[in-house]
Length: 102
Image (cartoon, rainbow, N blue to C red):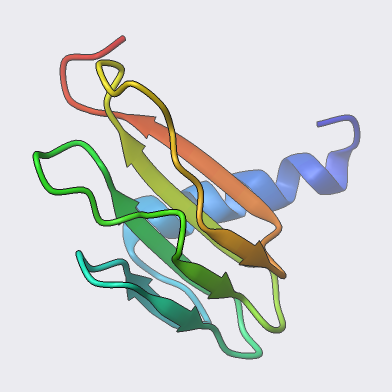
């Protein structure tokens, strides 16, 4: 981040993620093939690949539509690779390690 606006946006998104508040929708990936769409607001999409059955796969798609949208992705450091969905209109991607991974 190189400017105050980017820093403020990041802080707001982090705060919204931690508190669970947002002016948009929250969507969660499933173990099935997902095609998730957001709203005109600030949407949050969450995927978790820390367990034995990953929720994010190569065939998944997310489209944030309007607003400033965030993809929160829980991954394990022991995973052989990080798989990303096809993303459109996603402004922030946050990779979060599984508990105990540093």
